[in-house]
Amino acid sequence: VSLWTRIVALIALVLVSGTIVTGALSLFLLKRTLIEGVDADLSAAVSPSVIANPRRNISLITMGSPNAQYTPVDYVVEWQDQSGEVLQRVVQDSDGDLSLEFPSLTREEVISLQGKPFTLVAGDRDSWRVRAIASTDPDGPSVFVALPLRSVDKTMNEMALIIVLVGTMVVLVGVGLGGYVLHYALEPLRDVEKAAKNVAAGTLGTRIPVSYSSQEVHSLSVALNEMLIRLEKGFQAQA
Image 1: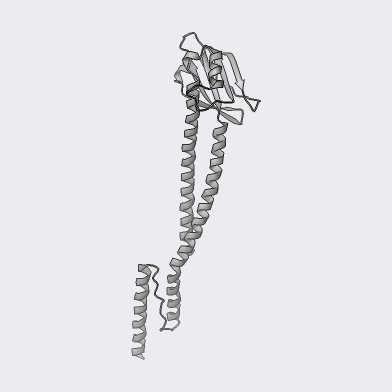
Image 2: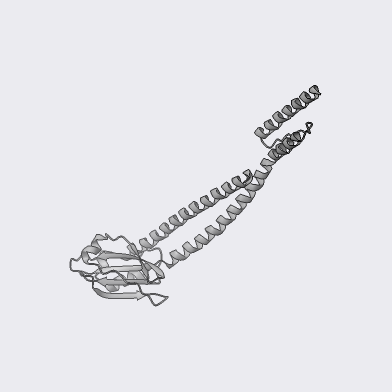
Protein backbone atom coordinates (compact mmCIF):
# COMPACT_ATOMS: atom_id res chain seq x y z
CA VAL A 1 0.00 0.00 0.00
CA SER A 2 1.40 3.37 -1.00
CA LEU A 3 2.11 6.19 1.44
CA TRP A 4 -0.44 8.37 -0.38
CA THR A 5 -3.17 5.77 0.14
CA ARG A 6 -2.35 5.38 3.82
CA ILE A 7 -2.38 9.11 4.55
CA VAL A 8 -5.60 9.71 2.58
CA ALA A 9 -7.24 6.81 4.44
CA LEU A 10 -6.10 8.37 7.74
CA ILE A 11 -7.53 11.74 6.71
CA ALA A 12 -10.84 10.09 5.83
CA LEU A 13 -10.91 8.24 9.16
CA VAL A 14 -10.26 11.44 11.13
CA LEU A 15 -12.94 13.37 9.22
CA VAL A 16 -15.54 10.61 9.57
CA SER A 17 -14.80 10.18 13.28
CA GLY A 18 -14.96 13.93 13.88
CA THR A 19 -18.25 14.19 11.99
CA ILE A 20 -19.82 11.33 13.95
CA VAL A 21 -18.71 12.67 17.33
CA THR A 22 -19.73 16.25 16.52
CA GLY A 23 -23.08 15.14 15.10
CA ALA A 24 -23.88 12.89 18.05
CA LEU A 25 -22.99 15.63 20.54
CA SER A 26 -25.05 18.20 18.63
CA LEU A 27 -28.09 15.89 18.56
CA PHE A 28 -27.71 15.16 22.27
CA LEU A 29 -27.55 18.84 23.22
CA LEU A 30 -30.42 19.74 20.88
CA LYS A 31 -32.69 17.01 22.24
CA ARG A 32 -31.88 17.97 25.82
CA THR A 33 -32.77 21.59 25.10
CA LEU A 34 -36.05 20.67 23.38
CA ILE A 35 -37.01 18.27 26.18
CA GLU A 36 -36.28 20.96 28.77
CA GLY A 37 -38.72 23.24 26.91
CA VAL A 38 -41.48 20.62 27.09
CA ASP A 39 -40.68 20.01 30.77
CA ALA A 40 -41.02 23.73 31.43
CA ASP A 41 -44.49 23.70 29.88
CA LEU A 42 -45.45 20.71 32.00
CA SER A 43 -44.24 22.46 35.14
CA ALA A 44 -46.17 25.60 34.22
CA ALA A 45 -49.38 23.69 33.51
CA VAL A 46 -49.45 21.45 36.59
CA SER A 47 -49.23 22.43 40.23
CA PRO A 48 -50.50 20.72 43.39
CA SER A 49 -53.00 23.52 44.07
CA VAL A 50 -55.07 22.75 40.96
CA ILE A 51 -54.94 18.94 41.02
CA ALA A 52 -58.24 18.61 42.84
CA ASN A 53 -60.00 20.91 40.34
CA PRO A 54 -60.22 19.13 36.96
CA ARG A 55 -61.88 22.00 35.12
CA ARG A 56 -59.27 24.51 36.20
CA ASN A 57 -56.45 22.09 35.40
CA ILE A 58 -57.80 21.36 31.91
CA SER A 59 -58.21 25.08 31.33
CA LEU A 60 -54.57 25.73 32.21
CA ILE A 61 -53.39 23.03 29.81
CA THR A 62 -55.65 23.81 26.84
CA MET A 63 -55.49 27.61 27.08
CA GLY A 64 -51.91 27.86 28.25
CA SER A 65 -50.55 29.28 31.48
CA PRO A 66 -48.77 32.66 31.52
CA ASN A 67 -45.41 30.90 31.90
CA ALA A 68 -45.93 28.34 29.13
CA GLN A 69 -43.84 28.60 25.98
CA TYR A 70 -46.66 27.46 23.72
CA THR A 71 -50.27 26.28 23.87
CA PRO A 72 -50.37 22.52 23.26
CA VAL A 73 -52.83 21.09 20.78
CA ASP A 74 -52.57 17.52 22.03
CA TYR A 75 -52.46 16.40 25.65
CA VAL A 76 -53.55 13.65 28.02
CA VAL A 77 -54.63 14.23 31.62
CA GLU A 78 -55.50 11.46 34.04
CA TRP A 79 -56.45 11.50 37.72
CA GLN A 80 -55.73 8.50 39.92
CA ASP A 81 -56.72 7.82 43.49
CA GLN A 82 -54.32 6.87 46.26
CA SER A 83 -54.23 3.23 45.14
CA GLY A 84 -53.58 4.02 41.47
CA GLU A 85 -57.14 3.53 40.18
CA VAL A 86 -58.22 5.86 37.37
CA LEU A 87 -60.76 8.48 38.44
CA GLN A 88 -60.95 10.56 35.29
CA ARG A 89 -59.14 10.76 31.95
CA VAL A 90 -59.19 13.52 29.34
CA VAL A 91 -57.56 13.00 25.93
CA GLN A 92 -56.94 15.44 23.09
CA ASP A 93 -55.00 13.79 20.28
CA SER A 94 -55.16 15.18 16.75
CA ASP A 95 -53.87 11.91 15.28
CA GLY A 96 -56.45 9.81 17.07
CA ASP A 97 -56.09 6.16 18.11
CA LEU A 98 -54.03 7.10 21.16
CA SER A 99 -52.88 4.10 23.19
CA LEU A 100 -50.89 5.97 25.84
CA GLU A 101 -51.27 4.26 29.21
CA PHE A 102 -50.06 5.82 32.44
CA PRO A 103 -48.57 3.53 35.09
CA SER A 104 -50.80 2.85 38.09
CA LEU A 105 -48.97 4.50 40.98
CA THR A 106 -49.90 4.91 44.60
CA ARG A 107 -49.68 8.31 46.25
CA GLU A 108 -46.35 7.35 47.85
CA GLU A 109 -44.92 6.30 44.48
CA VAL A 110 -46.04 9.55 42.86
CA ILE A 111 -44.45 11.56 45.66
CA SER A 112 -41.20 9.60 45.24
CA LEU A 113 -41.01 10.87 41.65
CA GLN A 114 -40.61 14.39 43.10
CA GLY A 115 -42.42 15.90 40.12
CA LYS A 116 -39.64 14.97 37.71
CA PRO A 117 -40.89 14.45 34.13
CA PHE A 118 -40.36 11.12 32.38
CA THR A 119 -41.00 9.73 28.91
CA LEU A 120 -43.62 7.19 27.86
CA VAL A 121 -44.26 5.66 24.45
CA ALA A 122 -47.79 5.30 23.09
CA GLY A 123 -47.84 1.91 21.41
CA ASP A 124 -44.88 1.73 19.03
CA ARG A 125 -44.99 5.24 17.57
CA ASP A 126 -45.26 8.48 19.55
CA SER A 127 -43.29 9.50 22.61
CA TRP A 128 -44.93 11.61 25.32
CA ARG A 129 -43.42 13.59 28.15
CA VAL A 130 -45.25 12.96 31.43
CA ARG A 131 -45.33 14.68 34.80
CA ALA A 132 -47.08 13.20 37.85
CA ILE A 133 -48.01 15.29 40.88
CA ALA A 134 -49.73 14.25 44.10
CA SER A 135 -52.33 16.49 45.71
CA THR A 136 -51.37 18.47 48.79
CA ASP A 137 -54.46 16.90 50.41
CA PRO A 138 -53.45 13.53 51.93
CA ASP A 139 -56.76 12.10 50.70
CA GLY A 140 -56.63 13.85 47.34
CA PRO A 141 -55.90 12.35 43.91
CA SER A 142 -52.76 12.36 41.83
CA VAL A 143 -52.70 13.82 38.34
CA PHE A 144 -50.71 12.70 35.30
CA VAL A 145 -50.25 15.18 32.47
CA ALA A 146 -48.64 14.20 29.15
CA LEU A 147 -47.55 16.37 26.23
CA PRO A 148 -46.45 14.89 22.89
CA LEU A 149 -42.84 14.88 21.70
CA ARG A 150 -43.77 14.78 18.00
CA SER A 151 -42.24 18.17 17.31
CA VAL A 152 -39.09 17.15 19.17
CA ASP A 153 -38.80 13.90 17.20
CA LYS A 154 -39.44 15.72 13.91
CA THR A 155 -36.77 18.32 14.67
CA MET A 156 -34.30 15.60 15.67
CA ASN A 157 -34.91 13.66 12.46
CA GLU A 158 -34.45 16.77 10.32
CA MET A 159 -31.27 17.73 12.17
CA ALA A 160 -29.90 14.18 11.83
CA LEU A 161 -30.52 14.33 8.07
CA ILE A 162 -28.76 17.70 7.81
CA ILE A 163 -25.79 16.39 9.82
CA VAL A 164 -25.49 13.34 7.55
CA LEU A 165 -25.64 15.42 4.36
CA VAL A 166 -23.25 18.12 5.58
CA GLY A 167 -20.93 15.57 7.15
CA THR A 168 -20.78 13.55 3.93
CA MET A 169 -19.96 16.69 1.96
CA VAL A 170 -17.24 17.69 4.43
CA VAL A 171 -15.66 14.23 4.29
CA LEU A 172 -15.69 14.11 0.48
CA VAL A 173 -14.28 17.62 0.11
CA GLY A 174 -11.70 17.01 2.84
CA VAL A 175 -10.51 13.74 1.33
CA GLY A 176 -10.38 15.22 -2.18
CA LEU A 177 -8.50 18.32 -1.07
CA GLY A 178 -6.19 16.33 1.19
CA GLY A 179 -5.43 13.85 -1.60
CA TYR A 180 -4.61 16.65 -4.03
CA VAL A 181 -2.32 18.49 -1.60
CA LEU A 182 -0.66 15.22 -0.61
CA HIS A 183 -0.07 14.33 -4.28
CA TYR A 184 1.64 17.68 -4.80
CA ALA A 185 3.70 17.27 -1.62
CA LEU A 186 4.91 13.79 -2.62
CA GLU A 187 5.84 14.76 -6.18
CA PRO A 188 9.51 15.54 -5.26
CA LEU A 189 9.85 12.07 -3.75
CA ARG A 190 8.82 10.56 -7.06
CA ASP A 191 11.57 12.62 -8.71
CA VAL A 192 14.05 11.18 -6.21
CA GLU A 193 12.84 7.68 -7.02
CA LYS A 194 13.20 8.28 -10.77
CA ALA A 195 16.72 9.71 -10.31
CA ALA A 196 17.76 6.73 -8.19
CA LYS A 197 16.62 4.34 -10.93
CA ASN A 198 18.58 6.29 -13.55
CA VAL A 199 21.73 6.20 -11.41
CA ALA A 200 21.31 2.48 -10.87
CA ALA A 201 21.06 2.09 -14.65
CA GLY A 202 24.42 3.88 -15.05
CA THR A 203 23.23 7.41 -15.92
CA LEU A 204 25.41 9.29 -13.47
CA GLY A 205 24.60 12.69 -14.97
CA THR A 206 21.08 12.50 -13.56
CA ARG A 207 20.06 15.42 -11.36
CA ILE A 208 17.05 15.79 -9.10
CA PRO A 209 14.84 18.87 -9.72
CA VAL A 210 15.20 21.16 -6.72
CA SER A 211 11.79 21.55 -5.09
CA TYR A 212 10.64 24.46 -2.95
CA SER A 213 7.42 22.81 -1.76
CA SER A 214 8.94 22.46 1.71
CA GLN A 215 12.24 23.15 3.44
CA GLU A 216 12.83 19.46 4.14
CA VAL A 217 12.29 18.38 0.52
CA HIS A 218 14.46 21.27 -0.74
CA SER A 219 17.33 20.28 1.58
CA LEU A 220 17.00 16.64 0.53
CA SER A 221 17.11 17.54 -3.17
CA VAL A 222 20.20 19.71 -2.75
CA ALA A 223 22.00 17.07 -0.66
CA LEU A 224 21.25 14.30 -3.15
CA ASN A 225 22.39 16.42 -6.10
CA GLU A 226 25.67 17.15 -4.31
CA MET A 227 26.10 13.43 -3.70
CA LEU A 228 25.43 12.65 -7.36
CA ILE A 229 27.96 15.28 -8.48
CA ARG A 230 30.66 13.80 -6.24
CA LEU A 231 29.77 10.31 -7.36
CA GLU A 232 30.03 11.30 -11.02
CA LYS A 233 33.38 13.06 -10.47
CA GLY A 234 34.68 10.01 -8.62
CA PHE A 235 33.85 7.72 -11.52
CA GLN A 236 35.34 10.18 -14.02
CA ALA A 237 38.59 10.34 -11.97
CA GLN A 238 38.83 6.55 -11.96
CA ALA A 239 38.30 6.45 -15.70
